[in-house]
Length: 241
Image 1 (tube, rainbow, N blue to C red):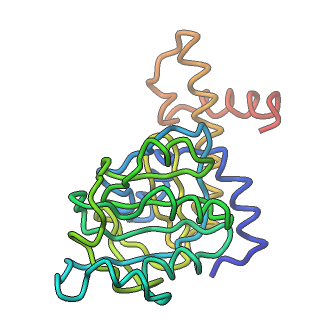
Image 2: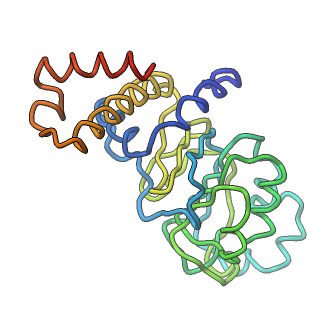
């Protein structure tokens, strides 16, 4: 379980790394399917989204149970999820990779933003996408979708294990999103993966500088020559990394 204090440390560390680097760190742990497929940011925010997963699950809509009147129910799972998502968490929605109808719209996402959510992710689509894109909250989806979610989706469960873009997501997992996409880090691996990702990022920054100077990647990336490690140690001390 990730505590509030550890989340603060993780956020400070992981805001400096990319989903690509975290993906490689997870691969070293044998996890290959943690990147949320076919999801992208509505607008790049130039920063990494970091938060714990708070989930919402949809099933295919059954017409006799999914009319507009369901929104009058204060306990309706979609509405309840927006009001229950804790500050600093990322709402992750399982829309069954179906963007024929919206997972949410700008009013609900605005409410999440005001309540302090760290972001929102769906493997479906958002309505009011241009408005959501300009909100000060990271938002990720498959594509814009104007129809109300009721036409295709029935909100059924809050904060249960879900699949989002083929990635398994458990409540409390660490969610990272950047301008490339979203990746899910199992809670029990968060500290270890964060440390590995920070180390990898430092080395890749060193490699990038060397490559731009004209150095070959052979022996450098990956570091299979002792000289590369020696040069990295000098670079790291000089750059206080």
